[in-house]
Length: 205
Image (tube, rainbow, N blue to C red; front, side):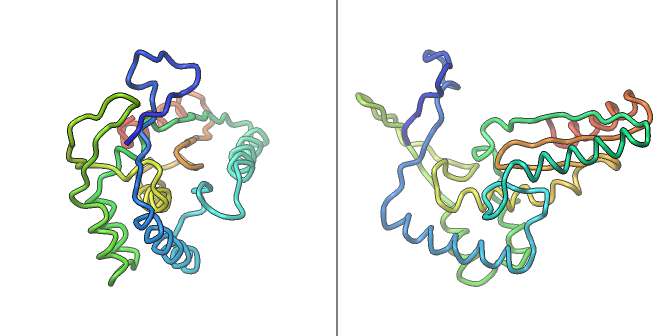
């Protein structure tokens, strides 16, 4: 794993660097094969929710923005107020709960060799940090999916696929990669804010 500097950040702080996994070439080929098949299955069976616009062909940020803008316009016509919260999920890939992810994969029909391979791919992962002059000790990676992994975006999308069921009643959400927006439209701004706070509590943010 190598730390990649985020432009404009304090170089002395660890959070100013993005950890990128250096994976074997053979492993990447296998990952690409699994990712191609998994993506085809998920799209063919309409498993990925419409709210997720990232990591998917034929979709862009404009689709998500249009969805929010339409709700704001509809609320305006009805003399209601829309409050939007924009969320940049820090360390999103690192925070994926693997057992929860595997449950969601199996629950959505990922089975057989594809499931077994993915399970083994996620289990017992180890990593160490390498810089120009230093290599750290090897650490067990108990959570997350690899930053820079070909399969990781698809796995993350599946992990977040039930986001709408977590949100409070009257709160809507949309995702583009690791960026999320949630919003509520109510007669009173305070009511919308209260609904969003409940949603943020449910998301633990």
